[in-house]
Length: 366
Ligand SMILES: [Zn+2]
Image 1: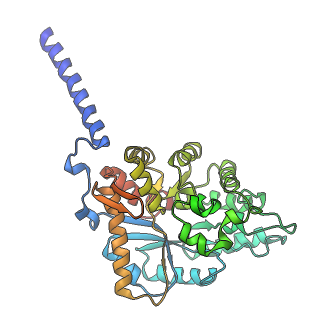
Image 2 (image 1 turned 135 degrees about the horizontal axis):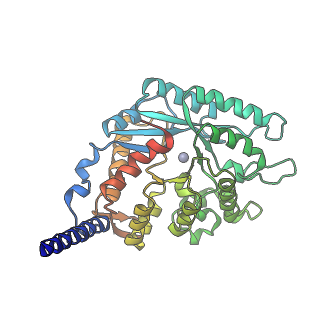
Image 3 (image 1 turned 135 degrees about the vertical axis):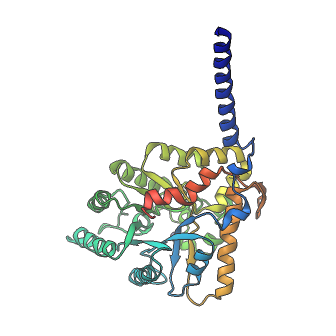
């Protein structure tokens, strides 16, 4: 009886160990039980969410492709000095939302016109309430705060300015997430020959190339202001657009995710993620597994009018599918000018989170 008992305990222990080994191996990707991973063929059957899209047209080709590829998405309205005005973008969002309430949600924004006027805060909250009543589910703060807006003395207004606190408090109390595009990629502050991905853009847009404008706030100023805003608003649901402008270094990003539990980031910096993977696949994969609850799949796709519909749909579909290949499989992928890498082959549960579950939790979709 005693022997039997010892044997039974031993069996229990062995069972426990093999269970642990099984789990460990699955998360390391060594024991590749097929059911733990998605394949390229699973692309269409899995529910997905693209958390960063701009649609500047009443045409529906993009939305049709989203239906076809099993995607829902967040359309983001931006207050920017070019292209469609903020109000036109918002009207388009409301128009599409009426016709495709199951396919999309939208994020509104606010203008900083009249920033110095006494009732700016009050009017801004009034405007946000109106947008929320029309279906907006999040609010975007763009880089114009920090890189363009100045006070009457010509000093830059940063995103941790006390005047924004009342607005951020209003959003926090109402459980409305902020999407923060604060600052720019670090490349923007570097000389052209030290940039990783942005040489082409900044060579043709010297006006936005901060390396040439040392009188503007530095990259560190932008990151510090954003961090300080998060410190002041620990309960704010926050999504840092474009990997929170820390695209160049996953360790720096990890530090912020550890420090600010309500900070999340969208993944719309694919080239950087591929480069991290090319340099150190294991480290990049570990980052995704560790922060699987804080990452939202996103593309920053912009859709304008008068694009060739078939061409547009093909481009959207190919982009989405290539990203799926990168996250779900370990197929070979080429990063132009850098070399070849293998996809991350993240476990199913991580894919489900970055493509769907995190968006459900943070943006309140269903
Ligand atoms: Zn964008």
